Image (tube, rainbow, N blue to C red):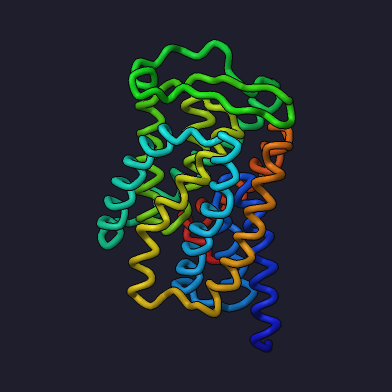
Length: 283
């Protein structure tokens, strides 16, 4: 394959990953890593290095638009990021001594449960939970917020509950990210949407900001270890920025039900990958 064809394919792949990554708040790494390792034979370390750059690019491209639309809950993002970062450091330290088999299985089961919760919430038809318990931590930190839903054409106020539970999920997500080398975007959305009862669109937009912060720390390590290949990461990043910009324009206009319909299969695929990896089944 010529360098030109390879570059064009990476641009296209980056664009697709950017669109879906910004809509779902996942960063696009969940698409890029398996595709370039399986179909293009890229070494996993270079694939992860490119994926981390891709996550930063998705975050940069999408977060700007979501900030302009005031969809991101910045206070919640920065509060939860503390726990993700701590978890990531713990996971990175444990990676050298810990058998990740059981953790893969546990997180795979957790994702299946999250997929079921999303399916149930989708069929209930209630996007913003009305009877939210008052959370003193959320009130003290001023985490309750609102956003303008372009699809519904009105302002959506919401309250945040179970802040300690959300922080615990984020801590676990950070550990999983550092220990297993997985993106934690799925768990970020899960913590905010299911545990803290934030609307899915606000959760997705907020996750887009957070994933860039988390990835930036890892990117430095991969860069200085020589695992960021410019000929691979460059075109992916360019395609992702364009895709993320488009995705961030599409997401606010989509019904929450449609976003869940896209999100649930992604969660279940990731759960299957983790379960198979935990059971020792190679791809």
